[in-house]
Amino acid sequence: MPIARFSFPKQWEDWTNWILGIWLCISPWALHFESETTLVENAVAVGFLLILAVVVELSSFRLWEEWINVVLGAWLLVSPWALGSARFAANADFVLVGVLVLALALYEIWDVRRNPADRT
Image (tube, rainbow, N blue to C red; front, side, top):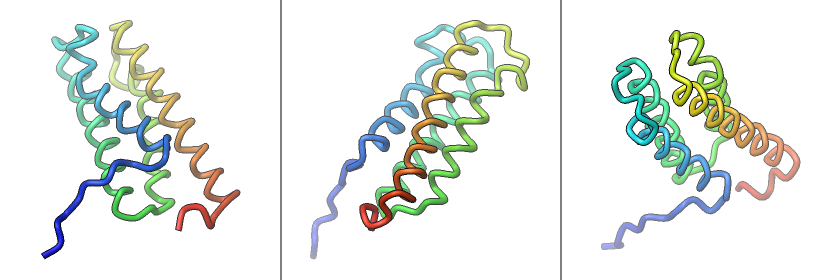
């Protein structure tokens, strides 16, 4: 019986998204906005979804998975205002991570369209 092996993301963008997802999950406590339940739920949920997207991408790359990251990054960018956050640390966290996630996803979409054979 073959032994199942875990494989880490091969693309640097996947590594970065994985780290950003983990960061989002722990950032409410690291940046001390854990008393704001809505902000904590937002950070943990989006962080978990980023991690999940990378895990799904490990099995087989699909371009639509990058579009999920575009949506998650865009949500992070607008979430401080949509959730009515007045916490500077949470706002900065969501905006910075949102910009990075959005930029990485758009870069990967561009790269796949430029070099489609590299992702097969």
